[in-house]
Length: 71
Image (cartoon, rainbow, N blue to C red; front, side, top):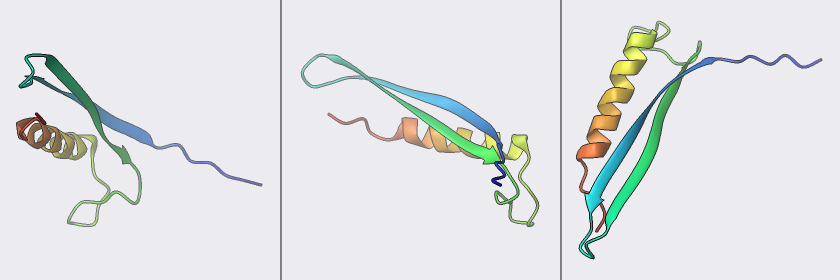
């Protein structure tokens, strides 16, 4: 007998657009996600809420967008 658990995924998409040295437009898309599960805990040892996860992945996405785009 196998038991399968499905955890709710919280995700957002980040898109980078830039014009390369060759004059062409480039786009890169990346998805940032975490799940709400008993193993995903905050510093206090409690399960992260949806708002805490959104704050974290939004900050991660914003940092990724600010990185220098490949040329």
